[in-house]
Length: 171
Image (cartoon, rainbow, N blue to C red; front, side, top):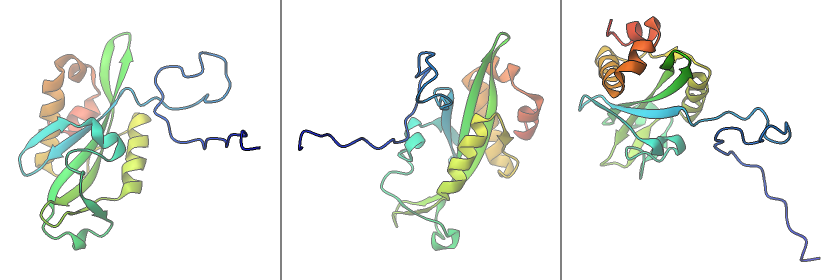
């Protein structure tokens, strides 16, 4: 009876392309995260960069930090924005289809930070569903993000919606 193997629990998988090869069975309807990138906006430094580790809450900013859900418990936290950016490809070309921002603060010295994980997951979902939610960001951070997206790929930026460009204060 020891030969009987335990069933593996079904966990969250990042699915690439068509995981079912068209058979329509298990895994149908799973979302693909291959067109999404996490962009970290460092408010203090005035920079933005892609950190793929953020997909699993393991970005350079997040490593070694215990996150709390009360912002007041991290009074000396350095402000960051984690922005989920989704790219869609059409016959006309690629464009930034979704962009949603989540607030995060980190106090490296105290090894504490503030973020709301449910907000991060919900915003990731909204970006996948092609929503643009950046209006709650501060003006400087919007400009940093807009400049980064524009310089990252000029053609993708040109094909993007007027709403995204307007919300990021670039046009």
